[in-house]
Length: 400
Image (cartoon, rainbow, N blue to C red; front, side, top):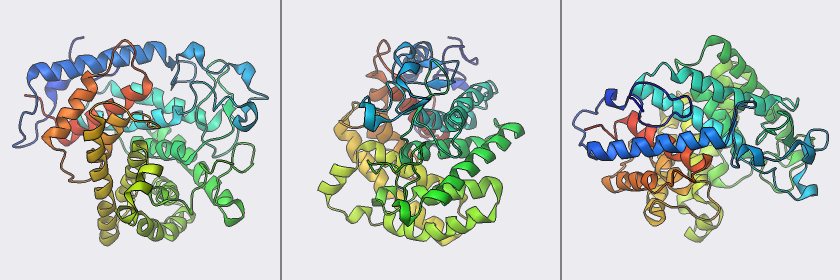
């Protein structure tokens, strides 16, 4: 692939890499050949993902090849209840909102690093997939995990706070990017308002702080609860209100943002004091990334200096945990994780001024190079690309 253009099948690392700015005084961490190897490997991964896992009909990236995504016949009147059919959330559809939110954030980082104008069309396409997850079903403010690739409208009725976290974060970051057109910003304001309004209606003591499934029922697994949760999940609710306030300036969102922010931060800061066994039991590596994702948004919106300092403080032990896990993972995965090596790297890179050491850089390189271009899927590709471009944007990785 020639540098300086975007291939129709991928948006990997090789494009415009020669034009990346170098951080003042930053060491050349890898050789030119090693940067080329990473670029080629990520490009190969994206070519496979775009060919195998992407649907132009829904603008979504799936965990399964598109032809194996849950068929329309599995859904009853457009909905799948995983508690009844026992088929999970629908083959390939479990985490489309996570992938797309992560990709919008990654593309925002990449644009900041390279100023590639062609990225705007890629980001808009990803946005269309996220929008479909929030609108195809006609349930205001409900963020579906994914949308049936066959009919473009059917969904699983169970979502999760994890889907909402990446959905909101991705839209918020894209909203503030020069790539985002005014018409798209108006759509994002409507989408974030709808999600926040759903939280206002449903996240109440009567519902055990559950934002409810698409059919209005309580989630029996507890994954849609937004308050009275574990410390690593406490920032999710104020994050939603903060994002809605930031893009709309509607006072009703601001009031709720202020109501939940301080207690959420206090709960979050208790995390380092928990017994290590409890952290291991309830916090796979993907939860570290999602915790940083919610805190990053709050840090970006908050204006009070003391509160900003508290938020930045809360991100440091999470980054430290991620650094420790990255060494153990050593470029691979762990049980119950979406993509442990990419999640661990990105969770470190999101914490302001956290030292991403030479050892961690080598682990990121190993993670990329250990990825089999012939079998890699959406999850690993998206997370490693997001970590790579955050490091590039920050000047932590520099082209020799």
